[in-house]
Image (tube, rainbow, N blue to C red; front, side):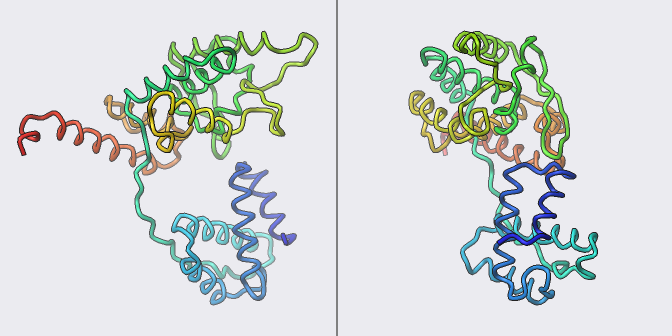
Length: 299
């Protein structure tokens, strides 16, 4: 059960901080868990109770990443309670962040991306044109899947060289489009417009759908990408819409792009988030040397 205080907090996150629906849903679950686990609930719990609850997360089999998010949700909630005068103290102030193992992002090689693009382009009809536009846009721009699928059709009607994207926290950035992506979008627009009934109002979305959101969902895009990966001879477990974003960043760095530029293109607030891609690029170089350098082959 959601308390009025939690509802107010989530409303504040949505309105003032422009939190995504995904973040709001996750925070609602995190706070509901804390509310149910704490004997006196979130509003009545003292520091010892909150610390005991948090320490118990690891024994429940939760990953360090999930525990870290729950800590963040609870800490932000209590800061909000302080600002609203609902609490005179912050019982979460001594919560230590759980240590998370550094996981390198999954990515694809340039050859694998080319194979994925060819497999997407081999599809017939409007569905094939839509898929190639999705893959081209994702790889050319590095957009988050939520940003890609929520693109409005008016944003691409005039064949722009750049897209203006509203990312996390409502921050805007420019996302460049190469010639290949622009051609794919133009081809999809023609097919999209041609299949719309004459008297039916146009959807505002570039990739419309009949679902509740009105546009293609991440789950459906992932399913289409899985099939394209199979057609391309790539393990579908290694592909996802987000992997295309990883490939965009990794291949830029492999090509010598400046880290700060890649940070801007990805919309990362903290360069430390972008730096993890340098490890992927370095690992790829080591693999190339191990496979092709004569001294490495002689070992």
